[in-house]
Length: 239
Image (tube, rainbow, N blue to C red):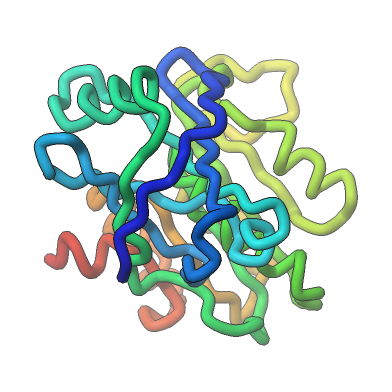
């Protein structure tokens, strides 16, 4: 882990409380991370905010950008500080990289990514890594949100699906989806309905501790080996 101060190149706001931030790494050739890891944004008061890295390492080295997806939690002082920083400063200090839920080599089994909200960032890093290294096993992405409008970067997984590189399942828990080709209900239910499609797969889950452990329990009850289920939650919020 190393600390770097990186210029903020662009801040996009694809959703009313989601920010897509691009950091310039061109002056920091020694930045290293595995796909799926996260960094800590170091705020002016020295508090730290963990953020999944949405870039794959190879993509970052090619375009020299580090991508983050930040959800503004309006009731969180930490989140308010972070959003103020990206909107008012021209650089961000980060501690990179952390986390044990990542890919360190090309996998040899199908991969199922279960991402809730901005958990898509972690899944995006790992999927782009697999696509860049000519991974030849099936990839499945289940991205769950509350409302259709919460899919803040839908063009990316739609492009993967159109290119037949990823089987993409958007899952909406609360919106009316009549007439729309989407999945309704809980994210884990959609995955369990499709279990026969990916035998021997490994599962990478990005979401709240409650969501992750509920998904783990449902998957293992269906016969999925616990060591085939991976999440950062197991480290930072063990039960």
